[in-house]
Length: 233
Image (tube, rainbow, N blue to C red):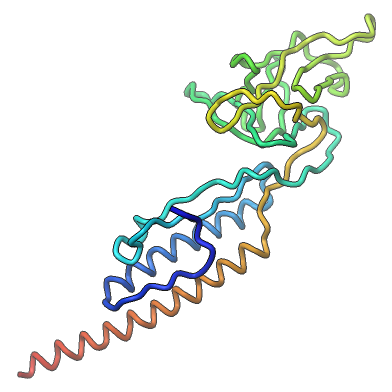
């Protein structure tokens, strides 16, 4: 299997091949559309269409996709609980059903119990796999300091030191802990989608779809004429 780099040229004739080609191209354009919609989403990673052999015979069943894990552009927000990863990897968050989800969207918040949460109230996990809970909720979020290694501390005005509050867990796509110093406090990561490239490649498949649609109409017309001719015999 390999990534598709351009329009698909289906050789051979037949209505079935035209239909398979159109179904496949529609699904590929759907992947491009999803990337375009994800352009403005924090931490979104683009999908790349992958096609297997014999696509002209099995149509959309030949299609899958890979996720491009290249790092997107980082933007400064200066919000203490906005985190971005400058290297490949993911934050771990806990869903209500107990499943763990990987994300690069590091826009976090604190609840009244000191739990570190995502924007959709998922619990952020530490490097040890447990939800991160602050020992206390600071009056000012600016007193929260997060190092490049993900270690969290709350600045104490009385002791002039940091009170530990856990370590952000950063993992690879297979769940292995990442040891690089890649956590950037006060930043978010933009998507890694290049809109111009998505539109150009999508237009190639649109032209190919239109060509196959014309071929389908021509073949269907010929088949109808043949059936009518046989009916008169």
